[in-house]
Amino acid sequence: MLRKLIPTNTVCALLVCSATLAGCASTNALVNTESAAPQAEVQPGSQPIQTWFAQVRDVVSRELRVDLSDVELSVTDTNGIATHAKTSLMGALEYDLEDSKFAESLVDNILTLQTESVLAIYAPSVKKILLHNTNLEKYLNKRTGGAKEALQALLIHELVHAADDKNHQAFQQNSMSYQEVFAKSAVIEGHAQWQTRRICKKAGCEKAFTQLNRYMFDSGTPEDPALQYVQSRSFKNLEFVYKEGERFIDKLQQRNNSTAMVSLAFTQPPRDSIQIIDPASFPNREREQRNDILSEIIETTAKPWRKNSTGSLKRNVLAAAAFSVDPSARQPIVNFYTSKILAATKHEYYEHGSDTPIPVAVIALQTDSTTTARKTASLIFNSTLNTYDQLKGDLVEIKDWKREHHSAEFQNRYAAQNTIEMHSASGYISNGLVNAEYPVEIITATSGPYLIHIDGRYVHGQTNLMQFAGRLLTAMRNLQDLPEARLASLSPE
Image 1 (cartoon, rainbow, N blue to C red):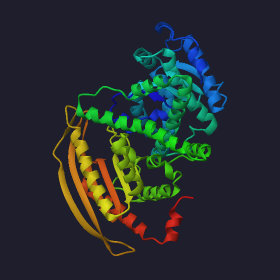
Image 2 (cartoon, helix red, strand yellow):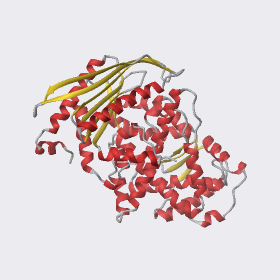
Image 3 (cartoon, rainbow, N blue to C red):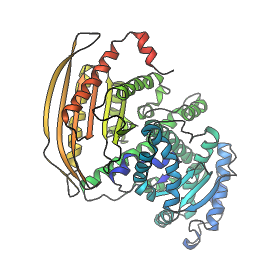
Image 4 (cartoon, one colour):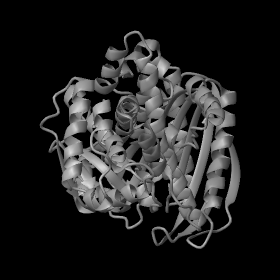
C-alpha cells in the first residue's frame, strides 16, 4: 500500500499504516513505448493506464518469476479502500482485543482518515490492485515527469505485493498480535520498496520512484501543537515501516543464503520491531522468548480494573519511541535497543464502551543492568511528561502535573529484599482531539534490571497503578531467580 501522510486524529495515529495489512503503496521496452499521454487521457481507469498496467505486470512477473496474469487493476474511492483495509485489520485487532464489536468500532475510528490518503492498495482477498480515484489524480497532477513513469513506480510496488502474496503467502496473519503484524508490515513494505527500487533502475523510473517517496512523506505542518505531535508520530511509524523495512531486507539480501533468509522473513517473520533494526541477528528466537515471558507476566498479573472491562493490544516498544531514520541519530538508538534492552513488550488497554478510546499503556523492559534500568526509567518518565507538555495548545489543555518520587522494598520469594524505585505524575487533560476530559497517570518504576512504565487515561487513582507496577516488578524479579528448568518450561516451543 502506498499512502500520503496527512494529519490524522489521535485514534488514527494509534495504528498508523494499518492498511499495510492489505498490502500498501524491465525494461527499456516500457520506457521506449508511447510517451506520456495528455492529462485528460490518464485519468484513473482510462485505457492508457490499463495498458501500462498490463505492461508493468509482465515486467514484474518476469523479474520475480511468478505468474501475475490473474491480478487485475480497479479504480475505487475511499469506501472501497476502507472495506479491504478493514477486513485485514480486523483480524489482528480481534485476536488481541478478543471482542469483535469493540475491535470494529476501533477499526472504524482508525480508518476514518487514513484511507483518505491512500494512493493504491493491493487487496489479497480479491487479487486486485485498487487505485484511489481522486488521490491518484492529485498525485499525477503534482508530478514533474511523465505520467507513465509515475504510474510505473506505483504499480511496480503494488505488483511486488501481489507477487509476495503468491510466493510467500505474505498476507496470512495466522492469529498474529498487532505487534507482530506491525513487524511483518515492515518486511512486506520493505521488500516491496527494495524490489521496486531495483526494477525501476532497469525500467527507467528511478526518478519517479524517488518522487513517489517524497510525495508519501511530504505534508504541511498543522498549526496546533497536538496535531503536530499526532502527525509526527504518524510520520515516524510510517517511515519506520518503509525505510527501516527496506534496510532490513537489504541486509538479508547481502547474506550468502539471501533467498532463504528473505523467504524466512515472510514465513517466520520478526515478531517485534527491534528485530527489524537488528537484521544481523535474524532470526533471534531467544529475544522473542524473553519478550513472550514479559508479555505473559503482564497478561497474568492482577489488573487494577474490573475483569473483562478492557481490550488489550500488544504494541511495539520501539515504534512508540522517538526513532529517527536520520543516520546520525539512528545508530545510537539502534545500539541501545539491541545491546542494552534484552527484552521488551508493551500492552495497551482500552476500556470497552468508552467514547474516549485513550488507552492505558503498560511497558515492561528487561535491561542489562540496574544502572541501565534506572537511567532508562528517568529518560522515559521525563520524555513522557515532555510529550504531554508539547500537546498544549488550543485543542489540548493540561493542568499542572503533580510529581512524586517513591522508594520501597519488597521481599523476593527466592532472594533477599529488593528495592523498587518509582516516579509518578498525575494530571488532568481537556482533549479537543477526542472531545473529552479525563485524568492521566504516569508511573515509571524499576527493580534491579527490570522496568515498568504505565501511562494513560485512568480514572481510579494513582495508588492502584502503583500497586500494579509493584506486582509486575515482583513477578519479573521472582522469574529471574527461578531455576533454569522452570524458566525453560515457560518459554514457547
